[in-house]
Length: 131
Figure (cartoon, helix red, strand yellow):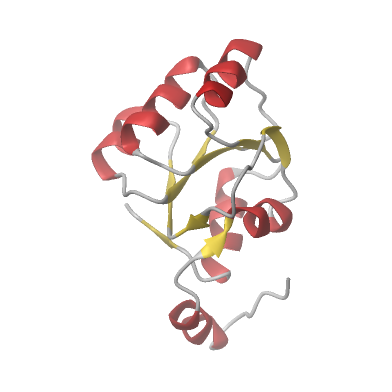
């Protein structure tokens, strides 16, 4: 996927209000921990290691980026009605976290990229943050 830089950024963002989760997974070089079963459309990004911030500023159909890998990250994602979770900085959740996500059909992904880089890449691709 080519990412438009500079002045083309505003044009690209206006033309592309959403992205498919599979496309996001490819651009962030993610590994799937729980499967992406549908062509989920992502409309915005919510990024934080603080689950209280995720709950305060969430928006349905968003993608959650976090470095927090405990069970609360999945519980927060379910309450906030986000479409999927990407764990950043190569952090991997324990087995029971992945199992809970699978039970609820919540895709979990992991990338070696940091949160700042992920946010920048997705912003350049046209997605906006919710905070």
